[in-house]
Amino acid sequence: MEFSIKSGSPEKQRSACVVVGVFENRKLTLPAGSIDKVANGYLSEIIRRGDMDGKAGSSLLLHAVPATQCDRVLLIGLGKEKEFREKEYCTAVRNAIKALNETGATDGTLFLTTIAVRKCSIDWRIRQAAIIAQETLYRFEQFKSKKSKVRRPLRKLAFNVDRRSELKQAENALAQGLAIAEGVTLARTLGNLPGNVCTPGYLADTALQIARDHALDCQIIERAEMETLGMHSLLSVAKGSRQPPKLVVVHYRGAQDAKEKPMVLIGKGITFDSGGISLKPGPEMDEMKFDMCGAASVLGTLKAVARMQLPINLTVLVPTTENMPDGAASKPGDIVTSMSGQTIEILNTDAEGRLILCDALTYAERFEPQAVIDVATLTGACVIALGHVASGLFANNDGLARDLLQAGDEAQDRAWQMPLWDEYQDLLKSNFADMANIGGRAAGSVSAACFLSRFAKKFEWAHLDIAGTAWKSGADKGATGRPVPLLAHYLLKRAGKLN
Image 1 (tube, one colour):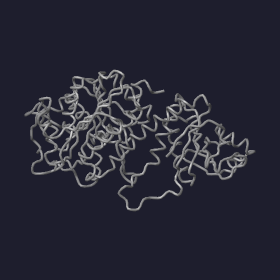
Image 2: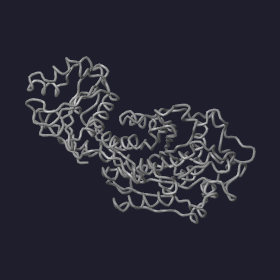
Image 3: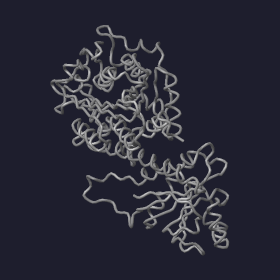
Image 4: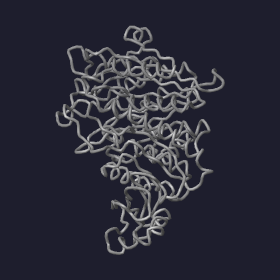
């Protein structure tokens, strides 16, 4: 898909399809009004007859509109003007791209980007439009012998701005949006791959390829070195799998001062989670291929940051393994010693994500990070608490939490802060080790975060539980690519590049 920025009147666009909006109660937006004026009320008459009422989700394709230079005009319903905010804008753009791709037009010019959204800049509108366009057009069909066909698929898309003076900043916002979209696409594709393809080795190879593409430093730590480092918590999860575990370490150095302390992102990379000896029930176990979506999201964010060439230093860590039942697998009641020296009683082998993340958190200490953010499909309890709308956010620093929440709002990739109070730490008491790896059914997502917090005392730290947001089930089953937009917007703001 080829993207561009344009400035000009809609009726003068030589395009296969021009897309304009109509508010509820049949109110034309300014671009739609411009077309209506030169067409002597052609749009107004169609709307007066009831063919388009402007309700959200509605659309109407018109051919050969008088006095225009485009082949088609696509009207998109925007809903009530007083209620048109960020969510409604994103929904309208998504509906427009979907409808446009089904028209048979190979190129289109979108004028929805000129509609004012309260407290949102032109940069935001363009950036979101680019991300949404790529998300809407995404298909994962590499394992299908017969691919779905779109007649004459959309190949070029232009976003319009009101004034020529906005062209440069809009082009910059477009570049940011496309970079973030590329990161989201990578995360979705990695998540959608089956577990027999996307193994720990495959994730490591993906990281190496990103490093080669963008001249980054990449190291893959193998089992023997993990043993030497004392990562017995991580290794305990890998004992039941025939796939060798990996710890992926990638350094992006974009700051002017190469010695500037980095941000660190850690992504949980369980490429298939059977639950181990604490075996999961059979129904929907296939979705446990998505248990590496934390890893996929930090690799996607790395790709976006490298493409945007942000002036920051960023280190990405991916601890990755399978969690499988086997004669050698960890058993409930086993005790392991983490890299930090703290001992862990494994009461449930299906609480394995925290066992690989804790050693990665300890490993991150050596980089003296500005802050560390780990991302994990960690607990079903978070799904019960927040559903599939918001990711759970835990942090030991209020400023870091606030910045991540704001980034989520900006990106329309929201998170909600959960408590991390000392009172919850008692849930992890063990009679036989320093801590247990589970704290019972009550406050399950909180006790999991409390577990991780014990390994994050030497730096500012946040934990994103994406168990409810990393993928969708049912008819729309597939990875979402979240929270790449949240993380990318956070790093853009931190780099001073977000307008």
